[in-house]
Image (cartoon, rainbow, N blue to C red; front, side, top):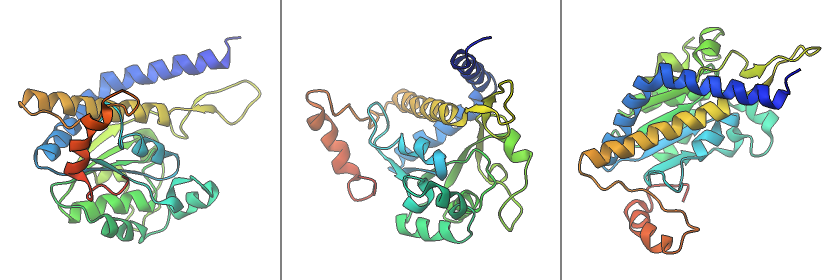
Length: 246
């Protein structure tokens, strides 16, 4: 019997290949939005509830990543603590407006929302309110899961029906990739790995787009490289006070 570790690795490789084959156009479209946001001196906000917040957080103050990225990390929704509670908090309507009012994004800004199921109230309302503010919205979600389940928002909508650009993480309904004998529940979640891959594909493509426009992209150097403090300081000065995660 093939070891589960190798089955999972092989499943992730297949998932990666499917994303590259089927989602590259949407990824390039999302990258163009990010590049335009940087050109307009805007901020790219990222948001995810539950485990999806990990993908949002990965983008902020990141070596090799764009400087003007702000991860919206509401403690009651992230699962940093009280993860069971966060599962219910993300289903409540009305929270998204409070959060976005605090961040006060502008029309020139962009919001990337990560939600595997795309069915819960908070991510859906984040997308709706961002649109009301004139922002572009990019969704990273599982279309198989979202299209195969009901919405938990009173509108009946799901995230993929609202976003300007939808990128399918190509994960199955329920997220898990492996089925073991003598086990009813599948194992090996895929959305974390696929979401991180998609996110960094968007960002690196956006950086290349900026270079091709003749713009020197605001990209952070690792803080563990000598000279990084001096290299990164102009970016900190440019966006200080506008990015709240700093």
